[in-house]
Image 1 (tube, rainbow, N blue to C red):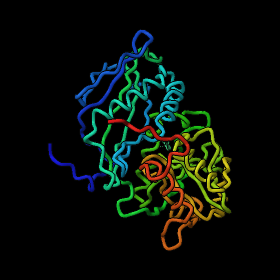
Image 2 (cartoon, rainbow, N blue to C red):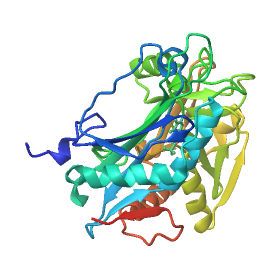
Image 3 (cartoon, rainbow, N blue to C red):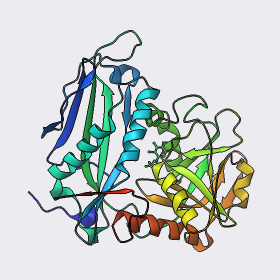
Image 4 (cartoon, rainbow, N blue to C red):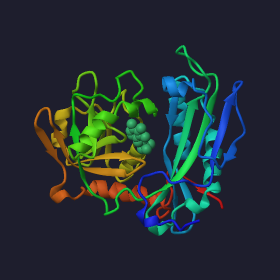
Length: 340
Ligand SMILES: *Cc1c(COP(=O)(O)O)cnc(C)c1O
């Protein structure tokens, strides 16, 4: 095998040695299978292809300075996948099966876990799809759960940095009582046009407003939103956002350093009052926001003096990363150490 250049990794797909699979048939999940094939054999009328019965997860494993591999909040991801399955009428996967699959796929691909010094990590992608044929609109009776891994580079190659985001009222990502709260591919398909437009205009993401009234902040395409003001961490409560595990972790860390946490509706005008703002998710932990341009109203909200991330963003980011890499004690029980 060619040596991997850990420093030049991006957030892309690289073939690894193995993936794991479990099949749901006759009302039960099979034993895990380890496969070296990157392909699956799928019925042309599978419900995942026609009616979007597909949910996924995203989590990471990190090699620490001590050489140990740590998976971040595996159980939370397992529970969220169960919710997503219930949300689009798929057979939910037992938490134990999820955990076993994640641990197995890491053990089978140890040589792809990037070294500590690289700042890279092993991205873990669980996926659950409806596989049996349907032409009428019904849920499948058979499902496939699989987990693939791929090494990914540090999100911030040139260091922690701010980017601009944009409000585009002409687009919605999810309906108030729709599937926004589930981690399903359909939400991502629905966000591609607006996301592409934002990128063309030079923004890193779209900040979506609530679809019904366009009065409240929802979330960014693939990341939750938060603002910081008066030692308070403020993040939207909404029925159409995906409950980010990073966001949940950041609220706990914020409380642990004496900050207040508010989870409530955030009116668009309140954006003017924040000292700092950020997006959060597994990919970047925190992606601090430079500026939000509300193009329809011709208003800009500025957060970063000289383009530098705010001090609270930096602090919370460093705290979370330290737990992931085993540099700080795992006080909250977030980490699973993989024995070699
Ligand atoms: C996955 C995801 C997030 C981030 O969730 P994490 O658990 O923090 O990775 C945020 N928003 C959407 C829409 C997502 O799909």
